[in-house]
Length: 73
Length: 250
Image (cartoon, rainbow over all chains, first blue to last red; front, side, top):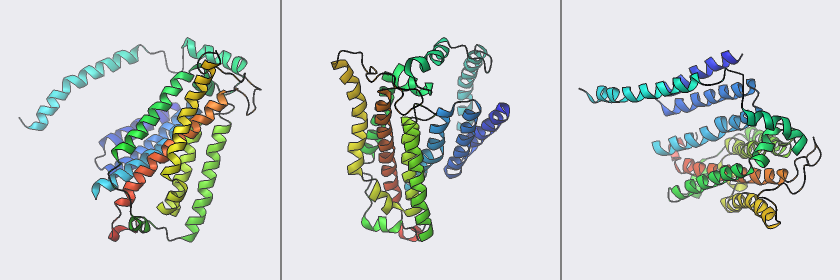
């Protein structure tokens, strides 16, 4: 289980790094973050998983999306 | 030689050195799943009998390493102050801008209010039981703030502004940060070490376990929730300002 999540997280991280469009990149980064959340749960670190869950899926995308929107105007 | 190849050639030695250091560092790590940190194992063994908290992580954050947490809280405070300073002249939404960010579905709006209340409730629960089960001031604080984001997503900026006004949030954030420091200084004045647990350990498994740790926990929750809301408000203002009439339906 740990190995599966680790491999998926590594693939997602590579996808984030290789993505050139910021809009797609932030969506990918959210998925990558969710995989890290699963990894933290699998590794029995629920406290980190809880904060990571909110920061990676709500806080970070919201700020980046607003910034992209504002700078593209 | 083109610029691109030149850049690649320049990056190559740096990448090589970085890779070598990483490999060297990784080779010295303990095998996966075999943690041998003395400090961690010691705290795991003594946190429950000493501090009566079943969540050792929170005991470390608010007691054994309480001073570090104060530093982290002040980092967040300073970061948000920086954002507010940087964006202070980037434009404030006018009434027309706000009117453009409108949600037309009544059903979505009612669902959103219920959803937002639910997420905020989960956040408060995470804070309250932070010393008993996984969670705590930081986790609960960010969850409370994201509950209000649900309100923006489903009911628009107008509802957001009604609930998360800057004039109310700024003092709340400062109060959260100040409460932590005040609790520390109060114990100093009383003749005990900085951030000393002056309420005693309390009863294991209840909301009052951990003693004055729970006060620090609520102070951090207030600071983190307000700091995140201030941050979101700043960025959402920029989003609303960027709405133009022809794409206002987005």
